[in-house]
Image (cartoon, rainbow, N blue to C red; front, side, top):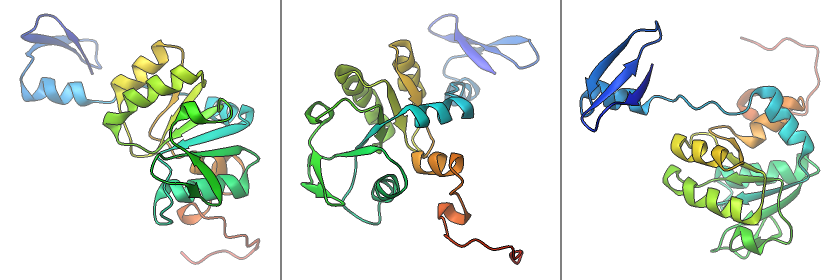
Length: 194
């Protein structure tokens, strides 16, 4: 189902069966339809190509806290990829032994992918920063969704991947994804217990 504005007070809901109906814009159903995810990002093949073509990644919202997902992703990318990895955090001097940068404009190069660990409401401003430095791709981490920002970024020429973990996708495409996303490093012909 999709909704299209008719007037300020009503919306037209386009149903999956081809029928449509007018709804009050402030009705619970109209509000629910507006929150439905209709944006679709790059396919698996396209995401693979993005990862294969990239040589550098900037992690915006990187944390020096080992319990944070951005730290785990940074660790994985440093150990399991050939990417040049940059950490962006104005409140830290160093993460995983690497210098951090206060913003994207301070990086020594334009990264191929900007991997974002920021709340959904921050994504529009991050997209503006990504476009300002000329990076081609923004990768918004798993659990973060801002459909309007994704649509805006794409309309301005940016490749947008959203609500996906770069570590999981990289590991999946490179044969390193196991239970809980960890590569056990064990090769065995034994069947595991179910």
